[in-house]
Length: 81
Image 1: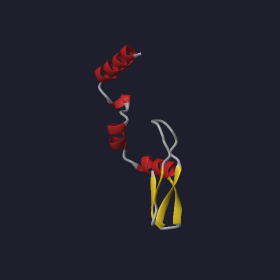
Image 2: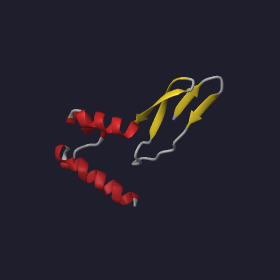
Image 3: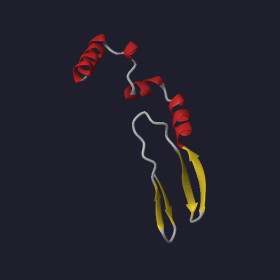
């Protein structure tokens, strides 16, 4: 979502869902002046420099998780189907 805060307030909305590529959005610097922001490219560039330990907090790496936790997650996912 992006906002233009001139005399008339405008919201630019791009609905996204989990797994969607993030759209480019305008970043308004002043009324009538904006720069495009490449949200997906920025997100990916940031994610790629995160330490693995931080990434594992968001997306656990099964190779470093106790096998019991991995198996429990698989059972829960199978049961949800």
